[in-house]
Length: 354
Ligand SMILES: O=C(O)CCC(=O)C(=O)O
Ligand SMILES: [Fe+2]
Picture 1: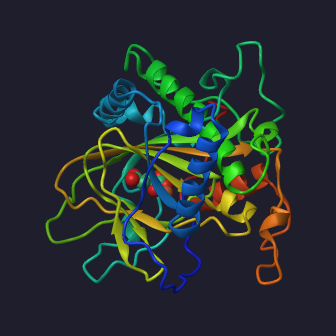
Picture 2: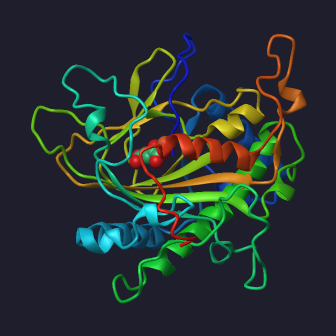
């Protein structure tokens, strides 16, 4: 999920690495522990826009299973993967073959093979549906689809990939639970009531992708897996395998590696939450280049509020020196606009909501 970077800021108060935060206090009954965690998270969000989270509550077994499911999906023959082609869905969900995703930004040096070839990455994308959500029951129905974003996922059938749907659904349910806790922590960090965002997370605008970055096909030529971009939802929870390739840009314009740490997830702030905080929380530019010679798999989970929620810059983030950066907008309107930009190359075949 990407958007072109706008600008770079200069600052002496810069970061050289991404901090690790133990988030076990997310579920603590002790308000002081929650407040203390919120302070650490505030610091990471304002200085870096990225942080690792340990003790997040998602089991290693589930993380291994969902990564295994991703490897099994991408190992399918191409014709089988194309059964779930993203162009068959009007909701940007499904399989996107290698070299089809268009890159936001290509400037990494003269030896870079560039945009004409697209990204060195294939993906499988899903979006919010009721069975993913542990806070909804089978009797719940989706709200009106004003922004044409809710809908069905193109799940691989059981005969092709047994257990795939179940495992990815279980992972998303856990990621949703964690996301709602993180939003409560962000509320605390921003001096709001802890439940400030709760009424806006009933049917959250969630998407997730399984990503596969093959090794460089030609030695000496560097191809980007994902070009420099910012995410545009509220935030992203990223599960990496053990292959390092993600880099984030600090304010001096230097690329800082975010190496995988076993069992630990990465969280980064996206544009929507950044705007909500009048850009006090940073939506940081990042990119992926797999130079390791190994296959890399990662699973980002993008969390946004309900599409009909209004994002209105928080009054306590506005000051004379920092005037309001944006007028209020509907979260769904914003997501729609960003999606249309990211998927310019792909023309939906409009064959229904599947
Ligand atoms: O694969 C990764 O490590 C990062 C993916 C990412 O930045 C994205 O999907 O927006
Ligand atoms: Fe990203």
